[in-house]
Image 1 (spheres, protein in one colour):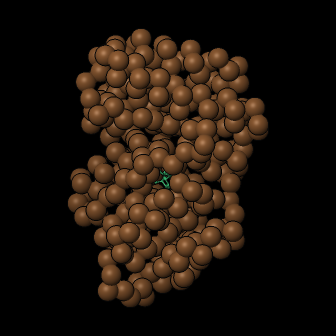
Image 2 (cartoon, rainbow, N blue to C red):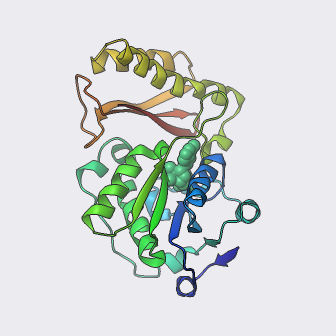
Length: 275
Ligand code: AMP
């Protein structure tokens, strides 16, 4: 496995296979592994990038506390026989004086974008940079970050970046909690309480499957379930059109039910798609 730290070294990669990029912020877990497995199935030359992108964190503490374990990440990725990893330093990606910022428009200002101002501009900027540096044929992202997937697809289309985007399903633990690097920061009772997120999403889907279309009613039922635990603090529960993320009163699929909630100092997100 090649370990690439400099942008100039990326150009030296020689492969007659198509190139696949799997962007991550490290602290590799089974969610990341599912993206890598999918890329491997497609038989490409696989590059995993590991970069905790400072400009996508509105909150400095959240950035500082973001889990990182580069040595163990490298060992895991070596065992998986990933072809190369790209692990640039911050000054390599954002040299002094860097000021470009990609504004993705309204879709970046709702939901996660509303609670994390500037987040999607940071995401769009780093993904554009990674696509420009690596020039991948394919790139892999997880449905767990549904809004991020939409932002990246839009960016890729509107700036004609020409990358084939693959979205893979959310990997969950045995209790339904979406695997996330942030789960490491939860204590036992918070972890237990966090089970309510996926349960509430399933409840939302169940109510819809029973024929209930009223978003307000469904959101209320979901909220009641989550707030049974006193540990949880909800940022939002959204029922939105899957194409533009506009909130809808009456569900007509495709609809995205998504939510964000705090458990202590840890903020988790999750979603389910109604087709
Ligand atoms: P991150 O390191 O959190 O930026 O995630 C890197 C990529 O892995 C993103 O495309 C995420 O959507 C994806 N990902 C993170 N957690 C999961 C999960 N539980 N299931 C599937 N994909 C995931």
